[in-house]
Each structure stands twice: as C-alpha cells, then as structure tokens.
Length: 343
Image (cartoon, rainbow, N blue to C red; front, side):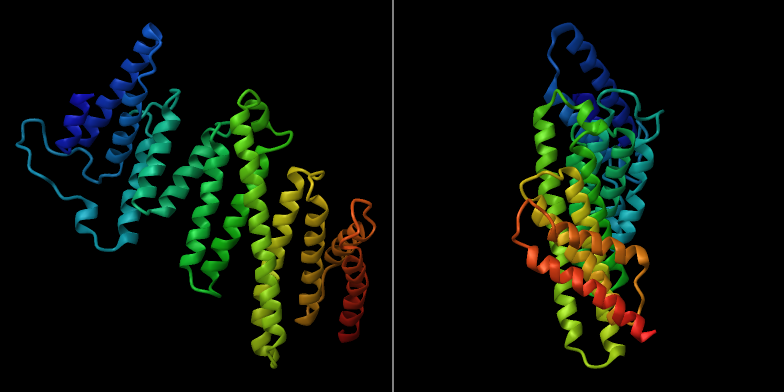
C-alpha cells in the first residue's frame, strides 16, 4: 500500500494504478487465508486508482527522474467544460482490461470510485456516463437502484442549470423522468429483485427510491403543466400563446409517462386510485391542449384518455375523484367535437 501511495505522490499514476491492483490481488489472497477482507486497504485503493485514471499525464516522470511537481488539466485549463471533456479519458482507461481487470469482484468498486471522483469534481456528464456504464455491465448489482436514482438527480441538477424554455432544459427534464422511470426495474417481479432476494435491505431501499422518485417526478410535471396552461390561457394572441401551450403539452406527456411508470411498480398500492386519477388528468390535458392549439389528437390519444378517465369514474376503490373524472369523460368528447368543428 505504501509503495503504491508513493508512486501516486510522485505523479507516476500508471505505475501507482498497477501497484494498487497488485495490492487488491494480495488482499484477495489474504482474505482466503485469514478471513480478513482488508476493507480499509480496498477502499483506499479504489479511491487512488480512480483519481489516477483522470490525469492526462498518466505516465508521469521516469523512475530515475527527480521529483518535480507537474501541472495537469485542472491546473492549466480555465474552461470547466473543456476540462471535463479532457478528463473523460478516465472512462476509457477504466475499461482497459490490460490496466483494470474487468472480471474481478472488486472491478465494479473501481468504476463506482471513478463516478465518485467525477462527482466531487462536479463533472456531472462524466458521472452520468460512468454510472450508466456500471448499470450496463452489472445490471444485477445490489446498488444499481441507488446509481439509477443518482443519474436522475444529476439530470434534475442540469435542468436547474438550464435556461427556462430552452431545448436543453426540456431535454434534461425528460431525461430525469426517464431515469426515474427506469427505477421500476428494481421492484415487483423483476430479474434484479430475484437476483437480490436474499438482500432485503437492498430491496427496501429500491422500493423507497421508486416510490419517492417516480411519484415526485410525475407530480412535478403535472404541476408544471397546470401552471403553463394557466399562463397560456391569459395570453391573448395565438402566436404568443401556442409556444406556452407547447411547453405545457410536453410537461403533461412527461407526467403521463411518470404516473404510468409509478403505477406499474405496484398497481394495488394504497395510493393507486389517486395515481390513476392524475394519470387520467394528464391524458385529458394532452387532448385539451392539442385542440386549443388547433391540432387534432390521434384516435389512440383520445381512446387512451377516455379509458383512463372512465376507469377512475367507475372505480370501486374510492369515489373521491368520481365527479372530476366524469367531467373528464364528457370534456374529452366535447374536445373531439370542437376539433371536428374547426376542421
């Protein structure tokens, strides 16, 4: 460990990585002999390996050269976006089997440490890329739901950093919901749950993330859509009004995706009835907004909205939303008529 650490301090990062890999293999051998997992040594090794992989000057000075501190990308690059692009090289290096063994039990921990390194450097897009790589390579990994949720959180951060009304903001917001919707793969009767059935803590953590993350995303898009519709209604001329309606339409489509994903993870949950109502509300608003913009909804959109509203109206679970759901059923028909009159 001290030898590997010394190579790191000498900025001989490639040599340091190879020595830390030797340390991990030695720790594996000692664990077989003594039962001691060497947790502290492993954690330190993962962190130093990850840090080393991001340096552009990976080789560093020759062994016989005197030690003189050398600048790297963060010391000389003033543009953080350019620095992030250059330091993405760590993602290529971590996948190099000649450098990082790809089939060891601790390989995933090195990938996770690299994600953490990018997180600490606020290089969010690099963190997303390495995180998605982890999920692709180890789909049954116990912490996969946590990683998936982190990806959604990053897209939320990027959404907040994007200007209102821009394509970038809409794209980041959509990706945040898409990432949270993927959390549904970690609950119910799924391969991940089966693979981790003997780890109740991991399964419970996944259920919490799904319920909280998906529902929050769906509710956020519902609220955003509602606010934009009210804003659009207050605008007199169509040329100015329609772009706001367009944004509301996007929000309600995302809301429908979110509520649908949330329901799919447990259609018999205690709040399923309310969730079904908000799903119907999203579908209904999609129809109303399209007609308001003089665009005809497709037969499938109309049928989906009508069925969702009827299901809430006729539900025997509760009657809290019976009246508004009944109004939706009637209004969907009215919207279709309005559209036909316009054409």
